Amino acid sequence: MSTSDTPIIPEEAAQPVAESIAEPVAETVADSAAVEPVAETVADTAVVEAPAAAAPKVPEMTPSECARQLKDRFPALFAGTAAKPLKLRIQADIKERAPGVFTKAVMSAFLRRHTGTTAYLIALTKAEHRFDLDGQPAGEITDEHRQVAQEELDRRRAVHQDRRAKDAETERANRDKARAEERAAQTQQREEQELQEQKRRNRAQLLRDFEKTTLTRGNFCVLKGLPEADLDRVLEIARKEMAEWVASRPATPPIEHLDDRRPRRPDGDRPARRDTRGPIGASGSPRRDRAPR
View: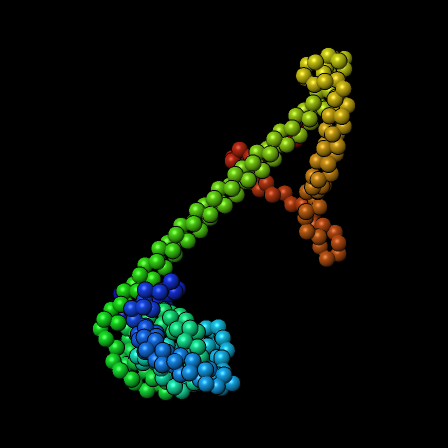
C-alpha cells in the first residue's frame, strides 16, 4: 500500500516512535535541561536573599487540559481536524509565548501522546514542512523521520489486520455455534412433538380397543401392558383429545342436489331439463327407439 493510501488505523503503544520522531519532545527536554540549572540557581539565590520573592508554582494539569489550552492559545497549529508536524524545539517556543502556564512534565507528556497518534504519523509521512505555533512552515522533515513514521504505521496496520482477522474468526465461530445450537433445539423440539403425537395416537388406539374389547378390565390391562390403576386416567385423556380433535375439524358442507345447481329464470322457476342424450346412444351407435310391444 502506498503512503497516500494509508488509512487511519487504531493507535497502539507508540513510545519508541515518540522517542524516534518526536524531536519536539526530545530536543526540547534537552534544551530545558540545559536551562533548568540556571533557573534553579537563580531561584535558590532569590530564596536566600528574599524568600518572599519566590516564583509562583505552576499549577498542575492533565495532558487533556494541556491540549485544550494549546488549541485555545495556538489554534493555527493545534486546532483543526488535520494534524500538522510540529517544529523542532516547539516546547521552547511554547514556554516563551506562554510563560508559567505549562510545566515541563505535562508538556512532555502531551507531546509524547500527540506525536504518537496515527493521525500525526500520517501527517509526518505526507507533509512537506514542519509548522510553528502560527501555522507557518518551519523546517523540513527528514527522510529518516518519514521512514520511522511509515514503519510504525505499517506495524499498526499489521496489528490491526491481525486483530480484525481474529475477531472475524471468533465471530464466525460464534455464529456457527449459534446455528448448531438452533438446529439442535429444532431437532429436539421436532422429536418431542413426534413423541407427543405418537403418545396421542397410542391413547386413541387404546380407547378404541377398550370400547370394543370383550376382555375383563384386568385382562385388557395385562394385554396392553398398562397398570390397571392408570387405565381410567389414560382413557380420560384419550376421550378429551378425541373431543378436541372432533371440534377442530371443519364442518362438512351439505351435498346439494343436482337440480339446485341449475340456474334459475328471472321468475324464479328453473328451466325444464333437456334430453341431452341426442341421437347417439351410450355405446356410440345411433339410438333406436323401441317399438311398442
